[in-house]
Image (cartoon, rainbow, N blue to C red; front, side, top):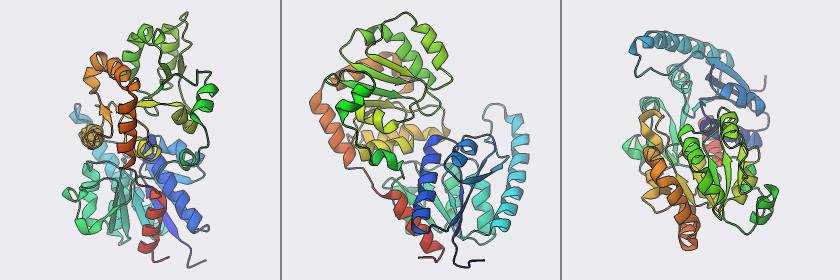
Length: 370
């Protein structure tokens, strides 16, 4: 057995926004220490169970679930699953014997980091949002280091443990060589017309889709081009609703496999306010209109959005005001070159580059392998 071999557990996921940074951290560790052994621990019914193996890493699932806020009686089952998850996490950690355990948010990170702490294994928290979640606040006391993406996080965590690193993003986005004109042509769009990319997250956003569907006639009769990512569960309904319409300036797709190309084509982006997406917009210097999801714990997407809005680095429309404000705000922004440039300049100042590599080196320090 190689005594110097680095062994790391990365726990969490739940959404693409959590998974991409986790995989980026794993890749950065592998680049520095190619013989490292990395194991992921996720939640059995969450997206990470598919996405992590696709990225080339092994993952073990815990039966963990989130608490029910309305059907409180169901939480008896949740408590049982938490106990089972704690037991399984302890067993996995004992068998794998990691040097460090990392939590990136998501259901699985709670029991995994709690068990690592009890077994006296150093832990590192990667808090992606501007407003810390309950789980990370509870885990912070036992954590060795806490990597954050926003200033002022000492209101949630011990200041001496905090390292401002930013959120890791997908490297292919930063290495893109697409020109804006060629990217637009790849969608059969006019390279000279303003183009808006509308994304609702990996699963799509029902409220955004509904608003756009009600606005299709205005969209098709405007001089603005749209790339509209609906999400897989909404695509059939939307295609049926627009059947027979001539939508030459609207590209409707359920999923975008090449986000670098889509970002390059966009003069402006409309998006949910997930932490990972915001980090990408900052690094790519993209003007963005944020529509925070109301369906996330502690309304942290609104807090993420306001962290940018307060710096005049993004625009913001509440989910409940989409029908009144989305299309007018898109139109007034995309036609105002000065505003677009101002948003681009301001969001650029919030970018933190090389985050995955910085976090990887902090992990190596904890493991005494650097």
